[in-house]
Image: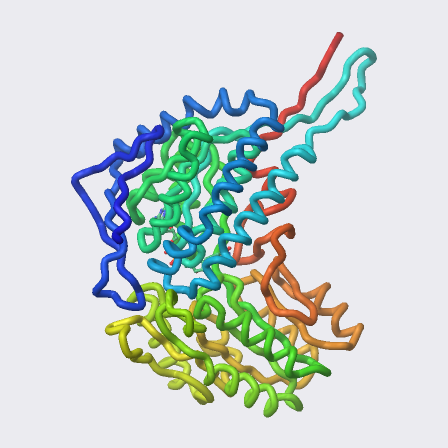
Length: 479
Ligand code: NAD
């Protein structure tokens, strides 16, 4: 089966003369999807359609909007298998991971609906004048553009669609050009539930994305992807002064300071590093280990990495799928090559892998690099592949210095039973999310985001998301 979709504009799937294809990363000769590439006039039509439908949607009581959206989420959950297959076909992760992604997307979306019903932060404030009541009120922002990457083709779009619509906005989604099938299914599933134009889907790459985010009719841009693209988006939104929320890359560390149950710790670190073949923004990519534990940690991580079974994501025996596209595989190969030149030692993996029955698949072996210098690229730059860089340290001061020495600030984990050391990590670690004695996998009802080069503006999920999808108004009610 080949997914074949146009752009979903005002409730109709619209074709254009330009098309692009997607491919199965486990068997790249296999075309998975055929899509119409949007152009500037379709972008303009989408924005106009969103504007038209947003006001009547915003006028509905929040409870009514949430009821419709709850039915939409139920529908998504009922189609979990179709969505999971679409994710696996284009992104490559195992079906188990894809099903988990859909489940988590639904859980987060339901939580954001609860957030809508708990109130958007509007409140009464005492007035300076007799007979006047002051109200600080929030209203829907208007037309939201959501630009998403290829690693979580359902969860990232839903993380934006659910709060955008819940708080009374219209939303236009441009998914990654590598993984648009899942968002097309999400668009189809909205049919008959959401008014035409409330949720629209636009296809394309940088040009289409740029046209969307700089369109004068757009009020908010929520973006998840790389730092380089984030910078371009900020520059492009200077044209319309739209509000921006950016979720960017990471160089996430697990610090193993004194882990009494080292096996449990290494299970969590290895899982957090390698799931989705390391193509998670929250993947553990550096392991900072106190020198006394180094030998056990190195051996334990290498053993875990070397027994993982690679293969096509749709095959039941597979534990880890491929890289999502050729350039990503090449990037991982180049990063490991550079690490070796910088003196790192390969304890496991370190090579591209050929799998029988998956000719040309973009597989890379789970890799553990030892003796990585804290100032080298493998210790500082995002690799976005199944690669763990081991860095040794002696003192807690040194660990915290290394931890905070990178540009990124998304998430980190700290393994220790020492209350003082834990307190220092919680107070001083420069990341948006901090985990003590567990890996970096987040809950579905906790704010999700980063600081420094990992994020700008509102987090996903929770109160700052509510603020991003609404605007603030000071109201003076005289009598
Ligand atoms: P990317 O930045 O290349 O692309 C992301 C999206 O932006 C795609 O839809 C792409 O078509 C679009 N785009 C590209 N150029 C654009 C432009 N000039 N204007 C508007 N849109 C444009 O990222 P990617 O390779 O798809 O994803 C991997 C990156 O995403 C990694 O850096 C990863 O860490 C990051 N990421 C971050 C999070 C997070 O929550 N912090 C989550 C997932 C991925």
